[in-house]
Image (tube, rainbow, N blue to C red; front, side):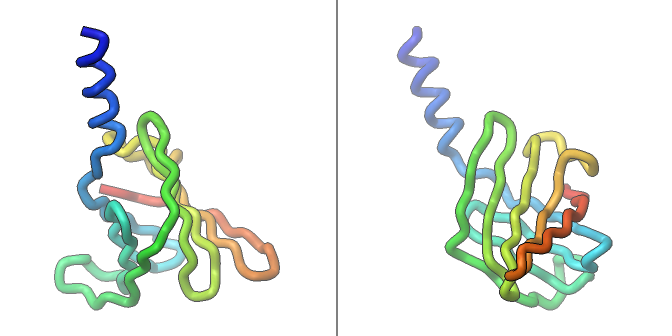
Length: 112
């Protein structure tokens, strides 16, 4: 029984998640988070919206309920944190953008 629980735990922790659509009103950006890439759009609905850029080669840190993705986009370091991937929160989910001089801005995220 313990072996079965361990195997199930490993399968769940390594499985990929469905794509998540997020929006931050302060940056006027909408983006889709997938397992191995993040796609940025103009502030329009994702279906039919013009794709601005797609970023691959991102680092992902998984937690028990969520994840943090770290990527470089437009010469800035972006850290996207989703606290709970099954229950999104406008308070606990955020994106930090850091420029080359070290200045950081934190933006709240609305995800679905």
